[in-house]
Image 1: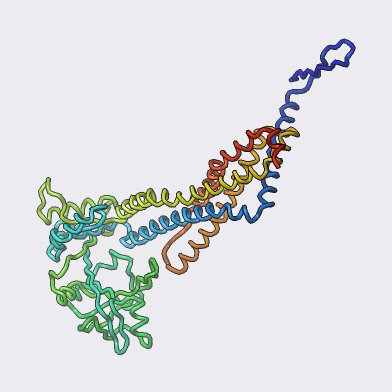
Image 2 (image 1 turned 60 degrees about the vertical axis):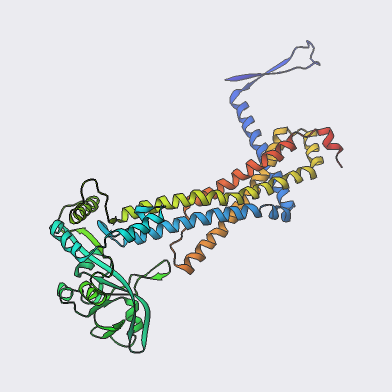
Length: 448
């Protein structure tokens, strides 16, 4: 295919225009190359202008650096919060429902109702455990746990505020606690309220640094207990160790603190070999508790059921709510950074008015000037975004090392940082770029 190009030549004998037949593909290729060369020239001019004023360019992007660093760090914190909750929820194990007197997830955003539920709802007692076992015990493994804090002592070594848990003998099947040495608690220990205990690895290391803990006597409060087992280490979460605990039989706990001293937490899981989907465990537990409490069809639950899935759902909602508040607030820093970039670009246009006039006079198009200043502002903010991204990534790494919190920089936040910094450069660079492109060449050349 060919395209006719016409050139008028007055010097020709007939005075007729001269026509050339040029291939259309060659004509398009020339335009593409010419377009690329213009953009390349605009990029080179913009980059040279930035490098020629390094100090001013560095000061210009400080706002963008801070804005991007704050936004990405907030994203990493929210991601870490979700990871932490997921780790906490995973301690329930798959297919395990936890029955509590009241749970925050049932009263999200209503602290007063949560406090009222804690005071007015009936405690979960040993009678509830036995009743639930009678109703659904043929299919469900049902255990219990109750918590307290007591000082632990052996000889001259002591620990304050140790988590003491009264548990049923099947707690190993309903939690992530595994025995490394010794044995588990048994139904015999529970029924006879024996003064025996299983200790976490931290308690073992601190109270028994010089000898084997198994068979030794330690004190919890004023009572003495024989160590029959040492749990395997579980590591730390959010910088806090998960191995500073002591397990005693639930019956022994009731004997020491009183059978009705506080509400019990129950754990429900399908028995091995019973075909019950994990999703149905919660409903079976709810049915059993409602029957135990003799609640009619129209009555609301006077207990709460927690599962890993429900905890993650509530956490996702909370992080979305917090993010919807924090992201706009942190975006203010980006807006301030963009305004600084716009002001500096306007000052640059004023300083380079004569240069712009010369470029327009020797053939530069107005859109070339527009592209040059848009590229310049975009390169500035992109550089600020990259620097801010590196700063926030370093802060995330240091925070994770020092706190133990599972904070992590999400990949989407890095891409968003680059995209947002470019958008800021374009949005806040449009006005200075338009002003530069609309300058009159004659008036610009007169500028001293």
